[in-house]
Amino acid sequence: MEKLRIGIVGAGNIAQSAHLPAYAKRSDVEVAAIADINLERAQAAAKKFGIPAAYDSVEALLAGTDVDIIDICVWNRAHSSVAIAAANAGKDILCEKPMALNLEHALKMQEAVEKAGVMFMMAVPTRYSAESQLLIQMVEEGKLGEIYYAKTAAIRRRGTPLGWFTDTSKSGGGPVIDIGVHCIDRTWYLMGRPKPVRVSAMTSKRIGNYQTKGVDRWVALDSDVTAFDTEDSAAGIIHFENGACMLFEVSWALNAPPAGYTQICGTKAGATLDPLTIYGEDMGYLTDNKPTTKNLGIFDEEIAHFLDCVRTGKQPRSSLSDGVTVQRMLQGIYDSARLGREVTL
Ligand SMILES: NC(=O)c1ccc[n+]([C@@H]2O[C@H](COP(=O)([O-])OP(=O)(O)OC[C@H]3O[C@@H](n4cnc5c(N)ncnc54)[C@H](O)[C@@H]3O)[C@@H](O)[C@H]2O)c1
Image 1 (cartoon, rainbow, N blue to C red):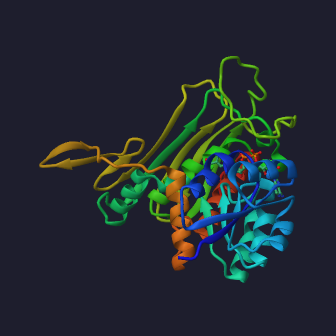
Image 2 (cartoon, rainbow, N blue to C red; image 1 turned 180 degrees about the horizontal axis):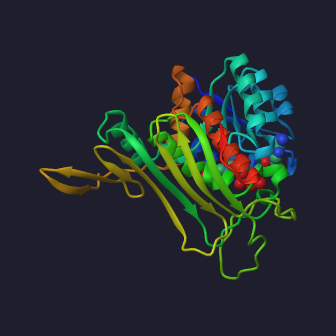
């Protein structure tokens, strides 16, 4: 089998801690080049991972090395420009979450990808855990009946990432777009991807740049960014065309116990994840079933699925249109919070 040639754009944390190690385990791909606006960082990553070429932009990479795939690991503001350059060059694309800085950027990406007819997959790894895959199979087989209610949360008491994450001009927002995207995306997927129609949400910026000691933080490689203008928590409700709704709560900083959950409720059974538990009924009694699954690593599973789609031409489970729909929900959350009322999507 001919090896697929990958070009990574963005040589930061997620590229080095998740994508490059996942490619390194495979014999059917070759990371042929890496680019970063910080050329020294791209060169250092190239040396560390044995990548033959390093560049300072996606354009230089596309001109200098022949690749089949562009894997986008840059901060959120640059997702659209890198994706559009890759699509225009006819490359298949794996794009880190969130799809884009905002809905406008996401729609421009969609236009370029559809015009070029290339493959595009959102990198949303929690969809690819063995538990998520088993649960979606159960949902698709109707084992939970009609899903009409869901709730999800990603609550950190103190866990604001440092660096570009807190600068809206580079990130697009705070916990909603950073970690809310994971739990909202996965919950919506498990609900069977109903069409979102209305959102009512609040966001808060009350805690801000705290000095709390003894807590861990994710530190972006450029941690000298001083801007701190994002929300630090949010909550709300998303309504869907089929009458179902999803409650969500997310925070980087909130005076509440840390929590992370995903719960979906159907007419025949309900489920929670991490660990997967099915709340059903059997022989007239309530049952809690905990299927045993084996996780191979969510980033490995995600990248294996993407490469399979590129080779076979099949539609990724986290598609371009899913990326746009999730971005529409995120935008609705920010619009509703800003306007102080429910918004129609
Ligand atoms: N899936 C996950 O669990 C997960 C976890 C962390 C981050 N992420 C996502 O990964 C992306 C990167 O986050 P990170 O934590 O690695 O950030 P990072 O700051 O560590 O790395 C981002 C890199 O992108 C580079 N860059 C910015 N604009 C560029 C451009 N136009 N061309 C080339 N390089 C450019 C920066 O110089 C930097 O080296 C973000 O979209 C983030 O949301 C996903």
